[in-house]
Figure 1 (cartoon, rainbow, N blue to C red):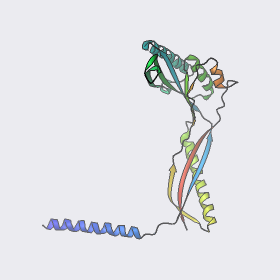
Figure 2: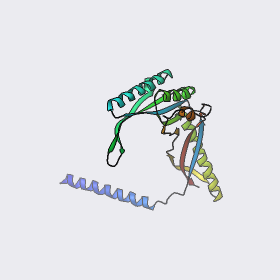
Figure 3: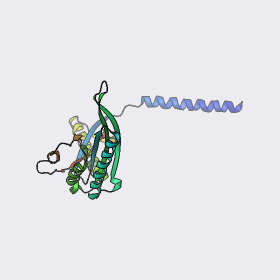
Figure 4: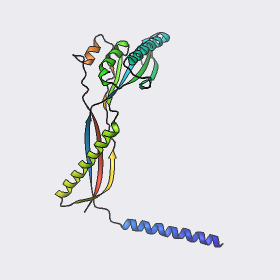
Amino acid sequence: MINRIMKGSVIALFLVFILSFLALAENQPEPRLISVTGEAEVKVVPDEVVLTLGVETWDKDLNVAKNQNDERVKKVLVVAKKHKIQSKDTQTDCISIEPRYEDQWQHRNFAGYFVSKRIALTLRDISKFEGLLSNSLEAGANYVYGIRFRTTELRKYKDQARVLAVRAAKEKAIGLARELGQKIGKPYKIQEERVEWWSWYGMNQNVTKPGIVGDFLGNEGSIALGQINVTAKITVSFELE
């Protein structure tokens, strides 16, 4: 009986404490804040590129379509080795086999079996990119799904962008507060917004037509790599003094 009474007293005291805390929290005035968002961008010369290619073959005989696809993929992988791409930087995925018909609604006039494979190649010597792309298309790749330039030092440049974004947010807050005759105090809350950092060129282009390789690479057969943007977006809430 005594133990029950003691337990009941402890629970009662705990409930009183919780209710008192909630009442105190409700009576606390809301902080006077100014919330701003700072953005910054750091331009970086890429030092690697991910080239995503597709190989598609078709024939009314499934085995023929599959064998043709396997042979083309093997040739593309040989090209990758010639450009010093290691096996860990080569990935074959998204394999599909699909029967297609000229009339999709009633499934008449069988066109054949379409076999597709997607190959992702990570090239760490940017100077070889143009040759890799051209040679891969000549070897049998007939789709370019994407070309993504990126940097291996993302963490360093991301940190730089964050610092600049915080500075931009603080400068903005100071300027806005000054116009209102106020001054900013300590930061109350800091939140980073998610932003994309890489350069992505989604092409999804069929390159099976004669002469398309030269047209694809440009009139002079050159691609300007330029720079990629590493960005940061920070939202900061400052107390107003």
